[in-house]
Length: 193
Image (cartoon, rainbow, N blue to C red):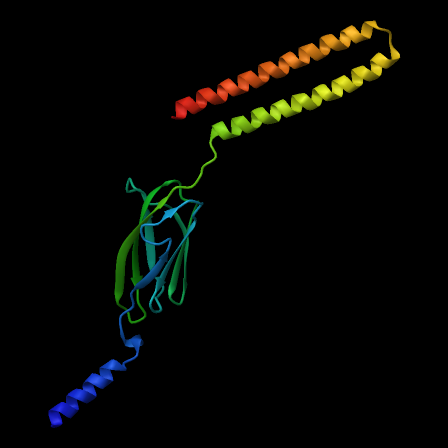
């Protein structure tokens, strides 16, 4: 009977032991393990089940094994945040972490994620600059036409022919610039494929 009572007391005590006596473990990460990120990423958070100590760190490895430069680490009770020196380029990364729990136990592990963010290419920039150039030429043509109209109103009929020739030349220039810009963008896109 005494053994049963003693066993019951020990079992009851173990059921109600606070979690603070248990070991700390990695609870969650941001980004999560296996995630695909579609925007720039420059900070990584590791959230633990309990407080962690100074000296807890992690490293970020690219798919070729190269280590990405870290700028700083901060610890806020149970959260370890690492800030990278620059946003990660598109690739698959492995985070290898080594931490120290509040009770002094070493913790380690790893998780991985993929960055697949949209990157503005030179083709996008050239297309935009080509459109900007066409808009600028159209604006300049409009100003020239207005100027020539003003001069034509005050001069004789010979100025009308000069106006027509100037407008034809300007339209020809716009057409050539537009075709050149389109061909250049088309060739670059073919090369990128």
